[in-house]
Amino acid sequence: MLQFKNPKKESQNPWNPLMGTASIDDDILTVLWTPEQLLQKVCELASQITYDFSSSPSSSPPVVVGVATGAFLFLADLVRNIRLPVAVDFVRAESYGSGTIAAGAPKISCEVKLDVAGKHVILVEDIVDTGNTVSCLISYLEGKGATSVSVCTLLDKPARRKVHFKLLGDGKFYSGFECPDSFVVGYGLDFNERYRNLPYIGVLKPEMYE
Image (cartoon, rainbow, N blue to C red; front, side, top):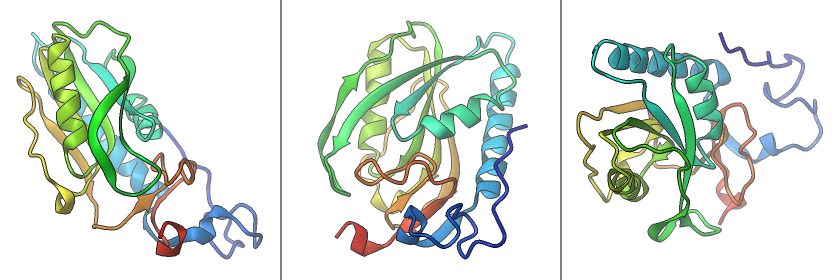
C-alpha cells in the first residue's frame, strides 16, 4: 500500500522539511486535507472503481485518462490501488491563463495517444469546478469512440459549477472531497505552476495571487 513520508514533529509546520527556514508551506493559509486523509480517500475511490469495473463480466478493463497536469499525482496513486489491469494515458485541456479564473472555452492541447474506441474510459481530474473542462473532455472522448466515460475527481467544487456535464454511456461520477469555494493548491494543484509538490491540499493565502 502507498505510504507517505512521516512529518517531522520538531518542525513548526508539520509538513515543512526545512525546519524553520522559508518554504512554500508559509504561503498556505490552512491545510484542508492531510497526506493521510488523501491516501485514505484515494484508496476508497480505487476500491469502488475496482468493484464497479470487475463486477460486470462483460466489462473490459478501463482506460484511465489523467487530465494534465493537475491530476498527475492523484492518478499515479489511484491506479496503484486499482486492482485491475488498466491502461493509462493523459490528455491536456487548457482553460486557465496565469490567474485563478478560467479564461474562455477549454482547448485540447495534448491528445490521448491510446485508441479508446470501444473502451470504457475513466477521466481522472484533480478538481471539478465550473464543469467546462470535464464537459469538453467527455465530448472529446465520445468523438474518439469511447463506449463510456466515467469521471473520477479528487475534489468537487459545486459552488463554481456552470456546466452540468452528462456522462457517456454507463459512466459513473466518483468524487473524493467537496471543496470549499477557496483557491486550493497542493497534491498536483498549482498556482502559476507552483505548489504542485505539496503533500497535502491547502488554501493559498490571498496575498499570493491577488
